[in-house]
Image 1 (tube, helix red, strand yellow):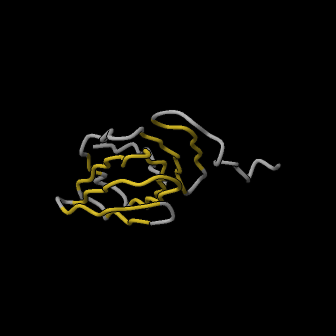
Image 2 (cartoon, helix red, strand yellow):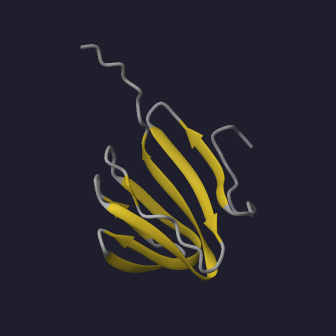
Length: 107
């Protein structure tokens, strides 16, 4: 297998399970056990693509709850508040967004 291919199916655990970054993208695979909910948070810099790999849950975006199952995708717009609640079998999802760049601003 090359460095360009990642086998995500066998990864188990809680929280971040895998991650990578290129010059343009950040990607993280996250897993949460049944009933666990992430704190609401906002990405003020980038749209975020969430792709449910296994399980189910509820992704709440700006107060609107969306039931999701494996193979569903949700685009969370820049500045939207989101939280994720795992369903009865837990949830594993891939989070992808443009890479953040650290810029130094001079007065």
